[in-house]
Image (cartoon, rainbow, N blue to C red; front, side, top):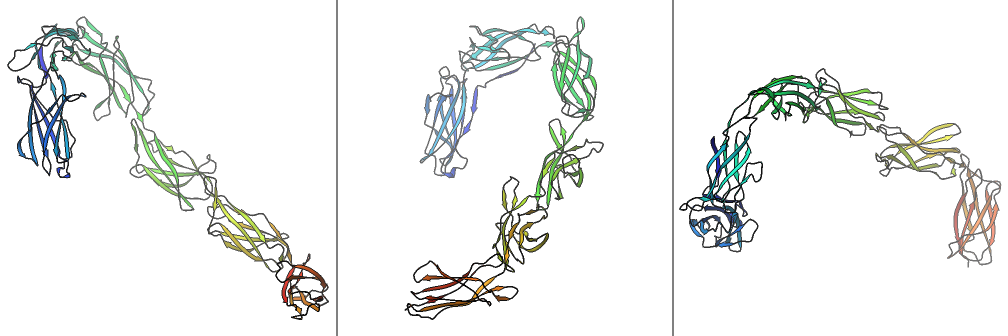
Length: 636
């Protein structure tokens, strides 16, 4: 038996944990860094605290508080002495004797350095315990093999409280083999017997101790009779080749070992599965053979190559390997992040990324041709354009919009990499429009006079709402009987509204129309019938005399005319006379008169009060009505 790997806490421990102060001292807050040196073999068990501190205004005071983990401080250390430098940048030291039995375990030293009203802190740590060592270590039996692994480790655990004191038993201390907690407990004389399973390195580690023993570990190396191993069988199962990357593949087999009695099953042995792709083998998976030596390991191969199975049991069996067979993988391609982006009114960009599937994700396929396809129904596809992927596998291609439909990207199989198509995305190339708020006026309109049509052009957003469509060309059409003609046109304003006027020469139907234009569908209003009539007017109107005496006769006269290509008098037509008294806002009809054969009319009234006189013609099916001019008469 050989001993090795002894580890323990040194007799002097120096530790620095955290510094809470900034590194720049001239900010006003001192920079502080502390260290703790614990001399556990010194009979006084001194703790030396060393503090490095800097402050532009100088350090006024240094002190430290000692505590165990989250407990309240059990001591405050003052009396720090400047041992080097000055109070602006120096090193201070102080010493404190630690009672190990009272403060066993991890301790913290929190140091505070003060400069004026500012202070900085730093924390260091140390372990209060007595130096511990192992003595008289043995392991029985000394020679083991894979069939006989039970051993017992015996020895003594001692502590030394100072360099002047003799080692004494570390009674009641728990020991562990790294598996069982605890595996053994020391007796009053420090002896122990710890049963465990032999390994190439048997470890013993001290744990909790009632006598403040420091934790210490020791490694022991047994003599192992190594047996030969052999894989009698190794094969791939359930793998229809080629295998898509990411598919689970299983290898089965049987492991044996050469025991003194002959070849037997290597139950519990460690089995590995490796891939040799021509650039060296790499381990893919591992497992443990069942008690009868059989194993079944499932894994996901990252690439093509030879599958090699190995068996080993470090320190107990010689390693051996066997090829399970060749494996051919294929890596599907995929188009990710496919999207359609508008590019002006009449084009869109088809973007995406071509990638190849790998075991742990994907890798880009660079410089690959991409076909951009369109379909009206998502079933029958035609190629519209081509593009090429960049170095990162991404691509972008522009296509012209002609009609609504579906778009997708295609990568064709090139013999080395399988082809793929993206998901299909529908795009509305033709935006619906509509004309609303339509009206044609006046109704009726004088023949030859303008009809004014008003309306508003809207387009449908992608979310289904409607918005104004500005700066678009809208036409005004008229239909007389079966004949339709474009009467006039105009441009929509920012709010989508449009106003268009055209002369009316006969009774007819009017409507507004739009498009279709590039990117927008056609729209039209319902027809609005407008009746046309001949225009009329009253001229030479006069109420006289002016002024007139009250009670005397006042005569109203004038001429009613109609536009029949040229202005002519309107014969034998009734004209109505209205009067509005001074100070009133209401007209009162006070009489009617028929025109003569030339359109002239006159009618006498008795003057009664000041006011305004008016003649009107109400119109009929052929002529528009008219209001004549007015005349004010002063009655005295």
